[in-house]
Length: 281
Image (cartoon, rainbow, N blue to C red; front, side):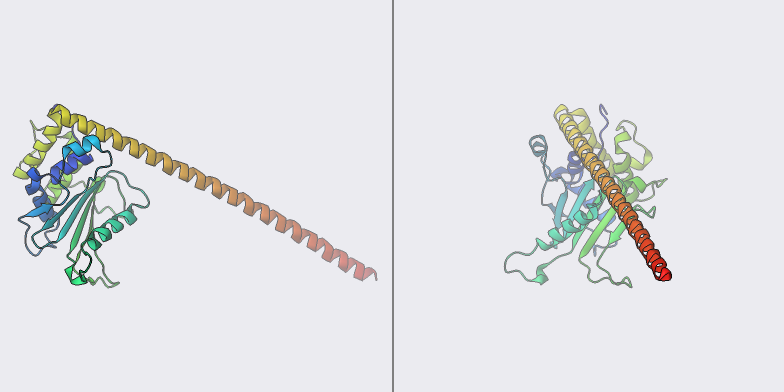
């Protein structure tokens, strides 16, 4: 390959799983990660927001997740997220709820609702306290009983994924997204020998070899880098303000404590004066 291409960059990610020519890759991806949820393997999906390379050249705010429906009207969303921040869990839940609720049009009843599956690939760690890279969330009670079977949210933390050797299709996809930038189509490792992985690699090669696509990739990479820098600066500024506010609050508490000590000392002096005066009389 002429240039290294990271499959996590949004325009590449959407070309991989959201383009008509790679529909079979999307089906394979969904069957891989949702095998325990689906009553039968997917054989067809309708991509609701298909990839269009022109939109990424002209619109920096392009919708970059992948949405699809199967023949039973079940809804699927796949999104790549390069950075983690404190409100990301809220965004993830809101997105799932928004997609789920948008199924109902005026006059529809609740029986029209279909399961909605949301899969998030996270480049940075979001969940602390464990080393599990895969998390699956549903509506459950405190005893683990599922409230309904209408889909759920899958979080795949790429930074935590370190399986070796690769022994499943799930691991193959995760390793591809985590280390794809290091791959060279002229010397692929054994775990990339499947038809799907070769097809995915050919999509990376297109971005690497074709000047227009590589320009598109570079533009998106630079834009995302700028956004991450701005976000980091905002977080640092917010943290600095919080620390300044904490110092100000601490100083105020110390001042109040000193004033209370002074008042207590004055009160003690007055008490002793009163005792002395009473004794003299």
